[in-house]
Image 1 (cartoon, rainbow, N blue to C red):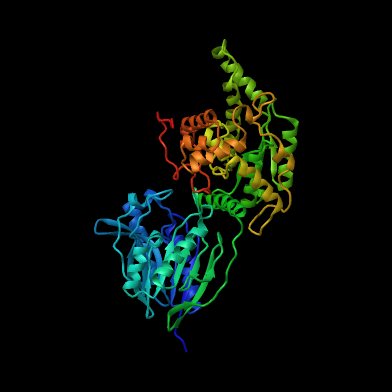
Image 2 (tube, rainbow, N blue to C red; image 1 turned 90 degrees about the vertical axis):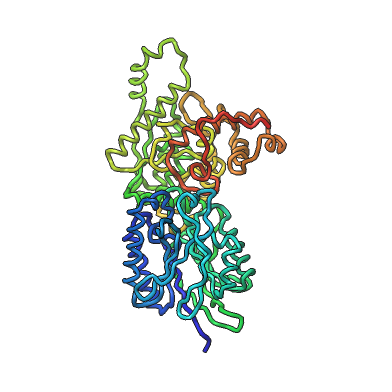
Length: 552
């Protein structure tokens, strides 16, 4: 009979800092692996601490506590399969992103991450020291090589492992979602398989952590690059993979091959999971949001209901004399379709009182954006008061187009603890609403069918802070604005490149100016899920005081 090796892959959702909870998850999965008679259980990168820890891992007490939990887990898992688990390692005055192999009640081997990512949302060179390229370790007679996440994106670590006798490559990851990243991962891992001639296991974590969502999608490749196992995206899952020894080396037996949804569904799932996990991991249970009758707040309401259930979502309409009757109707239709509570709190009396209070100071000055912003900030004040009183986290509802050019009022409609659509340009907001109306999935807690009325999607966007106001009074049409923003922000193109592509130079320069002068608002804005790979915050870090402009 051919030799067999069973590997249990645990695609799980840790919580940063919850060392005891993460250890309990690991032990529970160990019992599953032992029951399945596996030789090894593998958990993702930095699992014991959660990921990303950012500077928390630099705190010596935290790092020591994490390492103590690794030791405790080793003792708990003494009788059964070996366990691979990621965590921090403080050693000889250095700090490593490490992978621990637990066997017979103790740490049997340690792998230290060699390549430290220092781009996009990653800043590991700030946190960790570079480890040496490690050789393979032995589990039940099989030599396993473990490049940790970024180590597998370069050929040197896997080649060194193959040359030193590795028979299976097992890559633990903490890789967050970005559009079309799933395909890039598979292509790169196929390259490693072709180069080494070895089977490869890619194990990723799932779950939301602040602005990032780890999307799972773990998989197993056989020599030659054939896909043997494909785990789902976004869902926790545990899979037992059997490897069989052949004359050509170890081969993974065929397992389940999960199909992936399209990009629109992936993005929507990211926004739902990000909010769901942000709430759970910060201890909140309920949310509220200002429901204006516009498309952005309607989409945020749908995301909130899908993430938390209608019973945990409060929508609040805050009309002024500039609010159109159709907005009131549209807001009510959204709340009714989603099944959530809708409160109406008029702001006119408050606006009049504030205007009277400021009247003596403002006498002789023309009415301008100041009076518009008073309305927005009054709404923010009222919503935050409700948030404090009811213990419900306030969601903010600005899309990426607005956040980019500052078309949002700081301390007004930017007030809130989380923004589910922060990385979604306005044109994608329109399309996402259409997608949600046409689709429903088991992971959604909201109802099936049309939850955002077509009238909301089709009407011209307006902040409704003055008579007959339209967004296009102040901004280029969103199809033009978004195309410019994607090139300037997501692709880092120059003004000259945009002009060469056919955009009007004056419009491009105006948009560029708005982006730069709005940096201070983004610095104070609520976090939100990263979908584009070029999100505001860790992906894009710009100075607030900045005198440079692109004159190309």
